Length: 374
Image (tube, one colour):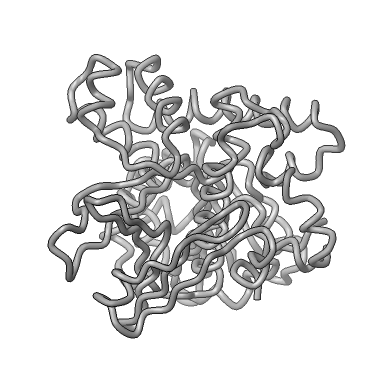
């Protein structure tokens, strides 16, 4: 079994607080949970949020029913908790009424679960997010040389656990297509009771074609023959469903800096390529720059998340086309990174002049390891 960054969640399990484990389906949330339960000496109850009986009890708000459900256990674990209506109130009753109780819940939809538990569990929860395998996950089982040899594979097929472990290109494609069909077309459509499934799927394809580019919601609406409000709603659902993540523009000091624009990246290169049915080798593709940028932005996001690196992330561009792919702002300092599959880029002197004290680095195939792992 591949060791994960959160291979042990025990330090995060605190009496009378809820450990919330977010992340897409099929990234290993349940594996992390069951691995912990197999080793614990605590008396626990494990249930699924898809169980109708559990939904009725924990969604009831009935103190006595919920206390009876918990009685005699040291730990309550609920997988896919977003399926339970009013789960936040039910969890609040548990942690407030049962002294010393420990609770773990997982959720593949931050849309449903975060909305339900946000206010009821204020000050009563610890939250982590699990992603497809990160380079900092895999370096526990593979060395730098091994992982660099598989770089092309990560750019084309991504790093979902089942995909990474599949032993042929054909099997990787089958797994990816199954994830897209079962998750994107079912779970995400159900998040906000979306009825125009074709519009959503077409939107995802357009976003996949524009990775690394600023996106105009007005243009997307025109292409899809729908209004901007609908586009905004669908993009919001895609973000909360762990399909895409947005990066906003930095505007502070310069009059001609672009403001109010966003770029969208996919949480996994393999999902992006499966949506477009593009699994060709890198030397046959014209989108290698987009694949490299998507991979770098997401792997860096994983590193910030797992490493508790608290930094704001942006891209930067001016109206005269000067740009930087990723800027991290931490403690008032700007670290700027340009992602180049091959070679270097010119030094952004105008940015460095207007943001004194900033750091700039070109990240390419030769030096990316330190950026993502060390």
